[in-house]
Every structure is written in C-alpha cells, then in structure tokens.
Image (tube, rainbow, N blue to C red):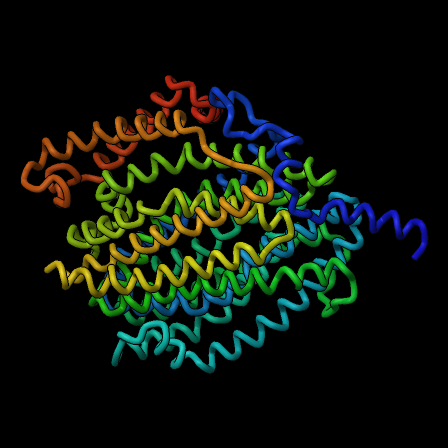
Amino acid sequence: MTESEDSREEERSLNKFIPPETDEVAEAAPPVERRATPRTGAAGPDRSKGAAFLVASGILLSRVAGLIRQTMMARYLGAGMAADAFNAAFRIPNLLQNLFGEGVLSASFIPEYAGLLGKREEKEATRLAGAVAGMLALVASIIVLLGVLSAPWLVAIIANGFTGEKRDLTVRLTRILFPGAGLLVFSAWCLGVLNSHRRFFLSYTAPVLWNLAMIATLIFFHTGRDEAELAIYLAYGSVVGSALQFGVQLPQVMKLARGVRPAISVATESVQNVFRNFLPAFIGRGVVQVSAYVDAWLASYLGNGAVSSFTYAQTIYVLPISLFGMAISAAELPAMSRATGTTAEIGAYLRVRLVNGLDRISYFIVPSVVALFALGDLIVHLLFESGRFQRGNTIWVWQILIGSTVGLLASTMGRLYSSTFYAMRDTKTPLRFAIVRVVLTTALGYVFALVLPGALGLDRKIGAAGLTASAGIAGWVEFYLLRRELDNRIGRTRLIPARMTRLWAAAIAGAAIPWIYKVAMDRANPVFSTHEGVIHSKFVALLLLAIYGVTYVALTAAFKIPEARTVIQRARRAAKL
C-alpha cells in the first residue's frame, strides 16, 4: 500500500466510531443532564434545525395528502369488507418497501455514503450508490415475483381471519400492489442519496404524488362501482403513484450522483461496509414488520371494521412520530455520520446533538399525546367522519388512539437513539432491542386484544385499543434498553425534569379548554361520548383543536421554552408571506 493510500485509510478510520470508556467521554464534555437551566440555544449547528424543518415540512405535506387519501377512502370504502381487504393487502407488499426501503437504507447506506461525501470522495460515493442500486434491483425483483405467486399463502398468514369473498379480494389486491412496492424501494434509494447531499425537501414531498394518484382514482372511478371494484381500481392507482414518486426524484439524484450506474459489485470497502450493516438493519426492520403484521392478524379476529379502524387510527398516531421523530432523526443522521476526531470528541459531539434532538422531540410529542388522549374524537371527526364513516366508527378509532398514547413518546425518542447507533456504524444493537420489543408486543398484544376484553366483560372491539397500548409498553422497554446502552458508550443523556414538567402542564392546561366545552355540551357521557352537540360541524372541531395548539405554544413561550420561540418566529414569517 502506498503512502497516500495509508493516509487515506487513516482518514477514513476516523469516521468509524469505537465505543469510548465512560471516563474518557466525561473528560471530553460535562454530562448534559447537569445543566441547571434549560438550554437557550442549540449546541449543534443551526443548519440541523433548518434541515429538520425541511424534512418536517416535506413529511407534513405528504402526510396531509395521506390524510386526504384516508378521508376519501373512509368516504367511499367505509370500514367494511372492502376496506378491510384493501388495508390488509396493502400491508403485505409494504413489507418489501419497509424491509429494503427507507429505514434499512438510512441505517446502512446513508452513514457510509455521507461519510464519503464528508471526505470529498465523490467518485467512491457514486460507485457505492450504483452498487446499492444494482443489488436492490436484483433482490427486489425476485421478491416481487415471489410475492405475486405466493399471495394466497401470504394472506393466509397475515389475515387468517378473512374467509370467502373477503379473502379472495385480499389476494387479488395483494398481487396488484406488489410491483408498486418494488418501485417504492428505489424511491427510498433516491431518498438516501438526496439526504446525504442534504437535499431533504424533495425526497419527503415525493410521496405526495403517490397519494394524489390514489385520491384521483377514488374521485374519478367511484361512480357506478361497488366497494370491491373500487378497491381494485385503487390498487392500480397505487402502482401508478409509486412510479410517479420514484420518477420525480430520479433527475435530481442523477444530477447529484453524476455518472451513477446500477452495478452488482462488492469489491470496494465502502460497499462491503454497507452490506455488512445492511443485514442487521434488514433483520431489525423485519422483526418490526412482523410485529405490525401480528397486530393486523390479531385485529382480523376482532370483527368487520377492526383492521380498517386500526389503520385509520395508525394514520393519525404515526403522524407526530413521522413529523418530529423521523424529521429530526433524518436530519441528524447525516450530520452525526460525518463526525471525525478522537473517540472522546466524537462521543461528546454525538451526546450534545442527541440531547438537542430529544428536547425538540419532547416539545412536540408531549402535546400530541395529550391531544390524542383528550381530543382524539375531534381529530377523527375532522379527518374521517363522512359518508359511510359514522359516529360509531369515530369513537372506535378514538379508543385505539388512546391506546397509542401509552408509548408515543418512547417510540419517537427511540428513533433518534437508533439513528445515533447507526451513525456509529452499529446496526446490531438496535436489532437486539427491536427483537425484545417485538416479542413483548406479540405476547402482550394477544393478551390485551383477545383475552382481556372477554375476561373483563368488555366489547371485543376494545381489543383494538389493547393492541396499541401493548405496543406502547413494549416501546418503553426498547427505549430504556437503547438509552442504557448508549449511556455506556457516550455518557448519560437525559431530559431536564423541570422542563418536562412545564411541557406537560402547558399541554394539559391547553386541552382543558376544549375538554370543558365538550363536557358542558354533553354531560351524559363525557369520556367516550359521541358528543353530537359539540362536533356537529367540522369547523367547531377545527376551532377547538386550534385553541388547544395556540394555548400550548403561548404557555410554553411564557415558560421560556426555546422551541416555542422558534415556532412563533416561523409563524410570523409565514404570516408575512
């Protein structure tokens, strides 16, 4: 090896994180939890907040489009047989997207690719992108083919409670949807390239096209067709949307990764590193998907409407996780991955970025938890209640949302902890803890969904809320394990108790106003009432939710929470525009 090659190899090795001794990290920087007062400024670069805002903006647009899609589905498919079949079928090919898509590529591809860019090795980065694209093309094509052929057996595994016409429709929809999932895998590859170049907005707004394709399908083809026929048209619309989502990102990717060509090669060290980290991330993502499918399988035994109601609720409670957990984690991962220096310096740098991210996450997730618990009926009514989606469906989905509040904060913060491990080129540790979470989710989900409702004399429909609650308990266990292991590597990372107390107080006080209004208007059953006197119009529901949001921001600003000032500044700039 030449002298220049030795120098290059030494430079690259700086980016490989070696777990430090606790004392070494403590010498590099003081423990973050010892701060006497809340932080008034971010320790990390301001650029990170801007990146997180771009990611959040893109996710918000795509999620709004997704909510519109779900609203249209609720209107035209309702929560019956066809809706259950479509939602169950939709989960099966999504396994391909999720296994090979954004989560796995973020864990394995982005850290290596961004690291090469940080060392200005653009040609090596381009070769890496081409090798990853080639391998994805090969593996995804094989799995799509196998998925289409084995659809009946997959449906039997995922939705064993379906029979007759409902089962046949689910099989047909699964076969239609699989090729679209393959295209979404390449959309995730584009996202990895764009994020590493710090081009966040396009990659996270691209799903808007996918949602728009499905919305257009529902609008133009619902007339004169029954629910089953419309579900088939909707599946084809999903495939078209997948192609659009991939196609809109491709020109920018080709511009940034100049000369990229798909190739099947594992000759270079960077490619080997990606595939070495890919397998644990793949397995970890796989076991998480197993948990999601176990939930769907259990829900299939809870009667007609359970699967679709669970899906509608999931659309809502995943929104804050995506907007804040995913946005902040996605923005931090490339920055963390470029860290160089001594072990102590890298550890201190990661710790400061992690705590800054946790503070931002908690500011937005705490009010989300309170809103879903206390005002979930208003949210469901505003988004879904129309056409075949009636008030009874609203209360059922709200109950599922209440279950989701158990672990919402843990799940969101856990994403950032996992991203920190990925930046350290460690995908095995999150895998181990993901397996623990899945085992717990499965065991507790069976008890909470199928055993407890009958034992307590409750309607079996409440079992759907048990699924989300059990997943939340398992999420806290995973979060604790992730945090404990990372404490051993880079030092303790904790949220400030006084700050968290102020956040919870502001959120509860903000929710009190619309809650009191609901109780005053409907005294018969203020907990799980349909509140017909309150939410007879979507405008009233929107107004009450707006009052809650404004009150929370105002109170946190009075408590001198830094994130409140940022929210107010952005709102003022938006108002000027």
